[in-house]
Image (cartoon, rainbow over all chains, first blue to last red; front, side, top):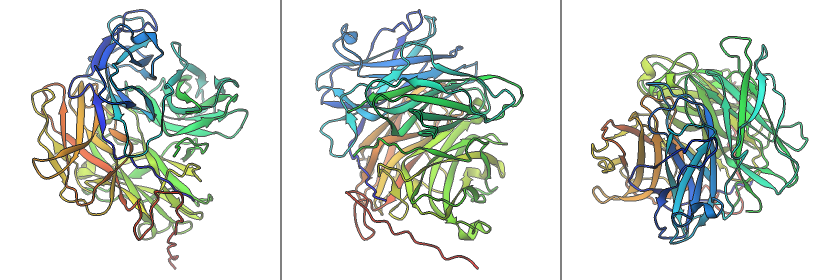
Length: 283
Length: 305
C-alpha cells in the first residue's frame, strides 16, 4: 500500500491570544445574526483558519442548532462579503450543575482566506428566539508561508442546511434497535463536487449508541459510517469531524440512514437530526 | 497531498452494541484483549479510532489508554501471548455521568495490518479506577485507505507522552491568562517523534484554555505550537482529545515541555498527555513514509503450536 504522510512543523496560533473568547449575544429572532466580535484586529501575515472553539458562558436550557460565521473585513463591513467559514453545531440541554465541555471544531481542510493586514471577526445565530444566549468564540490559525504541508483552500467552509432546521429521520427505535431508519437526502443530485469535512448529529435520547451511514448517489453500500454514543446529559455541539474528508462527485446526491441502540425503555420513537460542513471542489 | 477520500470508515461491531472491555484492577495494568475484528480480508486494514462508552461503570477523572492489537486469525485463544500491540490512544474524561461525545479518532490511521489477522482492543487506566472497570467500545477502521495518509505500525507507533503512567499536571496561575510554569514532558526526545494531538483533563468550569507545547532548556522554552480549548462546566463527561491540523515533527534531542494559561481564577491543575507517533517517518534504516511510495514489510508471527 503506498503511504504518504504530510508533516506540519508550523506553529498554530490562537485568536484572540491569551484572552477570553469574544462573547457575542443573540439578538432574538430565529436564525438572526448576533453582532460581530473581533478575533484578530490586523493579521500580521497571510493566514489559514484551522478551527474554532465555542463556549456558551453560563447555563443554557434549550436544545437547538446553531451556526458560527468567520468573516474578514473592516468593522461594520463584516457582512458585506460572504463569510470565509460557517461552522454548524447543536447545543443540547444543560441543567444546573450539569454541563459538558466546550469543543474544538477543526476545519480539517484549512481555509486560506485571511490576507495579511485583514481584520477577522465572528458572529453566530441559532434557531432559538431567545435574546439572552451568548457564545464565547475563539479560533486557531496558521501563518504563511508554511514550512510544511497542509491541505488548504481559498474556498469557504459551508454548511447544509444553513439558517434552517436540521434534517431529521424520525420514528427510529420503535421496538427495533439497530434497525435502519428511512433514508433522508442531504444533497440533491446537482452542483459541484464536494468534500464533506464534518457531520453534525443530534440524537434526542441519552445513553444511546448510534450509527449514521452516508450514501452517495443510488449506491446501496455506505460511502462511510459515523459511529458515536451519547451518555448521560450533554451539551456538546455534536459535530463529528471527518479527518479524511468524504468525496462526493458532482451532480451526485448524498443521503443518510440512522440507527440506534436499544434505549433503556421500549418502545420509543427517537429522532436523529443531521447537518453537514463541506467544501465545494475543486479546492 | 490530499486527504480527501472515497474510502469508507467501517465499524466493528457494526449495527450492534459496543463490545465490553475490562480494565485491570491494578494501576495502569493491561486488561484482557478482546477481539473486535475477526480475520481481516483487505490487503491493508488501518485503525482509524474508537468509540468509548461508559458501559457498566462510569468514570471520574479518567486517565486511560486503549491499546490496538493484532494477531493471526485463529490464534486469539491465547491473546496475551499472541497479540502484538501496534499502538495506543490516550483518553481522559472527568465525569461520565454528565455525558459528552465519545468518539476518539486517529487522524493518521495505523496501517499495515495484512489479511488474515484479527484486531483486538485492551484498556489500562490510572489508579485502576478503584478496581476493574467495564467499558464499552467499537473500533473504527479503513480497508485500503485510498489517500495514503496512514502510518504503518512497522514504521512508527502511536503512543503518548507520558505512556503507561499518570498524566502530568499543569497548575494554572490564579491570574487570568498568566502562564503556568513550564512542565517537562521529555528531557531529551530520542527516537523521531511527531506530535498528533493532546489528551487533557481540565475540571475548571466555564473557561477558555491555551496550552503551549514547547522545546528548549529549562527557563528558555520556546513554544512550538498552541492548542486552544474550552469548557462549559466542571466535571463534564467529554474525553478531551484535540488534534493538531497536521503531524508536528520534533527535532531530535529536544527537551519537550508544556505550559498553560486560561480565563478565570481557578488554580485546579490540568492533566496533560500528548499523543505522538514515534518512529522514523522521514527515512532511516526502516524506510520512511514521506515521499511517493513505501513498500511495507509485514513481520508475520509464527503460529503457536
